[in-house]
Amino acid sequence: MTAYLSVRETAEVLNMHFMSVYKLVQSGQLPALKIGSRWKIDRGELDEWIARRRGTRRRWLLVDADDGLWQAVSEALGPGHQLRRVDFAQLADGLSAEPDVVVIDPSRDRHAALAALAVCKGRHPAPVTVLVVGQADDAVVGDALRHGVVTLLPAPARPETVAQLEGVLGWN
Image 1 (cartoon, rainbow, N blue to C red):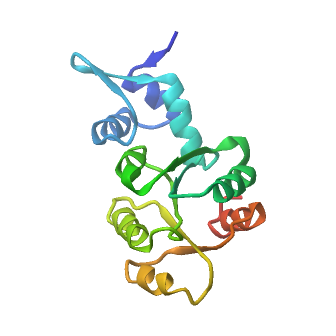
Image 2: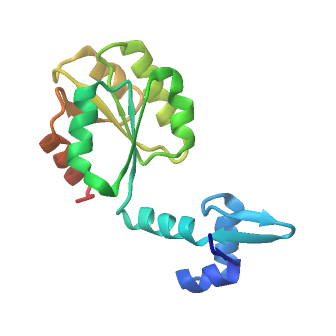
């Protein structure tokens, strides 16, 4: 059975003023359920929210990733992360889960990859966007940089390069 907390109980858990928690709930930053005029916070969802804010459980979205990229990221991340794979047509659905990191593979469709990158960069807050590239002078890199800062991951992706990426992002 799921335990629900009130805004005041949640404030005690988070060691925050109850109005600060209320603002997080109203803005949608903290998941909650409104029952009548009162907000209820699922204790399990609160624990996951806290873990994500600590940086221990990040949500990764792989866009148009082949099996090799999926395997490399899965192996490098281990069990503490949520990993999902979508194709370009499913990008909006994948972004609705508010991923922390979006890895885009442009090898099959460069134009769709650049469009996906633009969508990610247009979100607020924008997730960390990573572009898998075959060569440093790949033409897609120049096009991608026109959308703003983007992190590059060399292809083919290997678990050790994904682990290095986490290090560069300050997550390990």
